[in-house]
Amino acid sequence: MSKEMIVCKGISKSFPGANGSTLEVLKDISLSINENEFVVVLGPGQCGKTTLINLIAGLEMPTSGNVTVAGNPITKPNPDIGVVYQKTALFPWLSVQSNVGFGPMMKGMKKDERKKIVQHYIDLVGLTGFEKSYPIKLSGGMRQRVGIARAYCNNPSVLLMDEPFGHLDAQTRYLMQEEVVRIWEADKKTILFVTNNVEEAVYLADRIIVLSNCPTHIVTEFDVTLPRPRDYVSRDFLSLRKTVNDSLERTR
Amino acid sequence: MKKSLKRLISAISIASVLLFWYLITDGLHLFSSYLFPSPVAVFKAFVNKLTVTVPDGGTLFTHLVASLQVALYGYFLGIVIGVPLGILMAWHRKVDLIVKPIFDLIRPIPPVGWIPLMILWVGIGQSAKAMVIFVSAVTPCIVNSYTGIKQTSQVHLWVAQTFGATRRQMLFDVAIPSALPMIFSGLKVSLGASWMALVAAEMLASTKGLGYMIQMNRMVGRADNIIVGMLMIGVVGAILSAILGLVEDRFVKGRHV
Ligand SMILES: Nc1ncnc2c1ncn2[C@@H]1O[C@H](COP(=O)(O)OP(=O)(O)OP(=O)(O)O)[C@@H](O)[C@H]1O
Ligand SMILES: [Mg+2]
Image 1 (cartoon, rainbow over the protein chains, first blue to last red):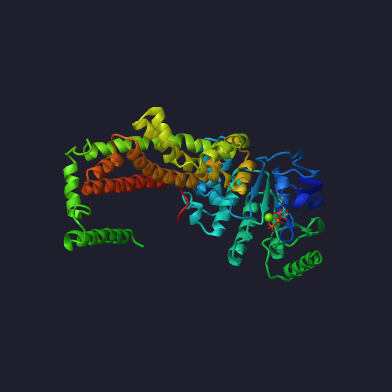
Image 2: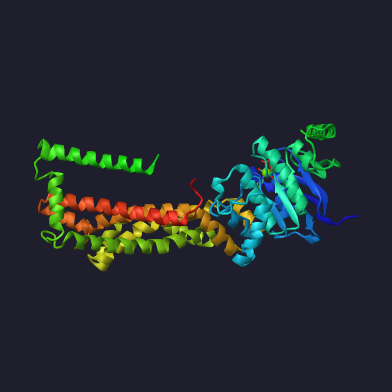
């Protein structure tokens, strides 16, 4: 049995809502993700997916319950947990290489030492030649590659991805899905990937966790055993896609 | 649009104003040449003023230097105090709580409103003017730096936090760089405000400078010298903001395609 990397035990999260009420966003979520597993959390819009990511990343504290990563309780952000965000969270004032090298820079790593690993991850995500470009000059897909390289460059053992391809056009999205699997296979990490797109979930996941609407709880789980690289239109793919989709429909 | 084409259009537009000016003065003689001198007369007055000190006690150059000195002195003082103060107010809640009410009270007083008090305190001269310019320069610096820091994107701060950034690193490596365009637009507004306050201050409380020069020439009815002074103020103001634009391009990266 493989090692448990991310463990959430009965976490709930409420925010203070309008005029004194409380908005219950997450309700009693328990999940466990194994080392180097690729888990996709599938949930409708505004159901608290970003909130879940922030709780695991240690950016916010759960109202009740607890989160551990690699056995350590999460009380604050931790460089061992990388995050790739929904919208471009790149720093527009930094070039591609400075964006990618941001984590090592925060750790105080020297410039020439940084340069080598930065180049390695820029090459890994296929952005060779764009080291000196600023994000504003890049396409949406390229920006997300930079975001992935930036998270990888810090060499975290856990990677949280918050709808990273949500605003890309369909063509680029397919391409990036292939890329993320390729990168993960080249440099294995425990990945928790959040999306509202069923096809994306089935393409990427070892396991799919389906969330309901607010207050959000876990509805069901699917193990995906289809061999990689997956074919979007194979019979098995389409039938699993339908099954997952039906489970999602019932939660609306 | 090509840069050379833009330049050509600017040149044509300035040339047509000069031509129109020439037409209604020396061309058609619509005004008395004493009240509204032609561009040719103004150019002659300009050349003359390079060496002659009558009637305002200085050559054009001495007045210009006096103005520049005091303007830049007050302006830099305004930046050095205003930008850090704005950043600090935005970053530390306590500083904000303490400084904000004082600032809100002082802010509506127009910079020229300080002149009488300054004259009383330090007399007519460079220091009184420098203080007035400082007051004009400091406000936009504070407001823009404050707003810039407050507008730092939450996601950028999250990213820095997940990389284990300290609060100090978050300020210097995230909040300040992200506020830089806003800070620079404050510097530009400040520069304009300083230059305008300078002229006002020199007309009220001074013994030299471009504002003083145009005020003196009004008393002796020399419209040509007044226009020379005004054009000088306009040209130098434009040059100063162009220089600031170059500095901005050097420091603010990745914001324009
Ligand atoms: N800091 C906060 N304070 C108050 N309410 C919040 C806060 N963060 C999130 N919420 C609320 O919690 C709910 C879930 O937000 P969240 O961003 O986690 O959803 P999401 O599933 O990521 O949405 P999207 O599909 O738009 O990405 C929303 O109604 C949001 O308004
Ligand atoms: Mg979200």
